[in-house]
Image 1 (cartoon, rainbow, N blue to C red):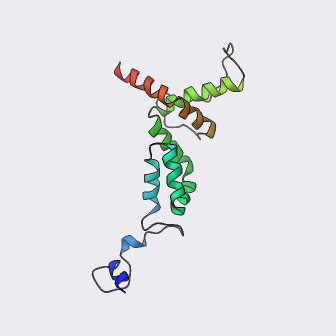
Image 2: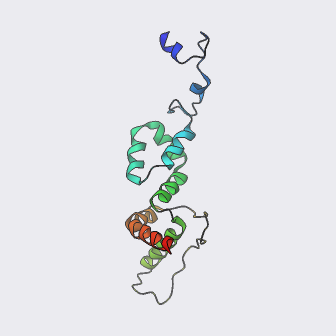
Image 3: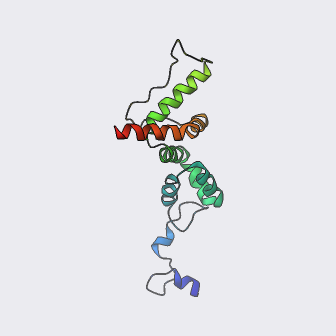
Length: 147
C-alpha cells in the first residue's frame, strides 16, 4: 500500500496520479511516447540511436512507429545543412549507379529545393554516404557561413 501512496494524488485514493496514466502502448514507459520520440530525435548520431533503441522495448516501439522522422532528425543533427547535403549525396549516388567517372551526360537526380524541408525518404544508402561525407559537408558549411 505504501507503493500506491507514492503514486496517488493528495488523497488516499488508489487512483494513480494523472501523469502516471499517460501510457500509450503495452511497452510504454511511465510517460508519453511523444517524450521518447523527442529524445530519439535529439540524439547526435546513429551509434547513440542504435544503443538507445536497444536499451528498452518502449524505445524500440517508438522508433518503429516514427522511423522516418527519427532518421531524418538524426541526419539533421549530423549535417545541419541536410537538404544541400542530400543533393550532393543523391548526385553522387546517381553517378555511381551510372558508372560514370567524369559524367558527360548528367544523370537525373531527384530534385531537392535549395532551402526546402521536402526531403522525401532518406534511404540506408543515403545515410551511409551522409556519414561518409559528414565531416567534409560540415567543413563546407562552416566555410560558407563565414563568407
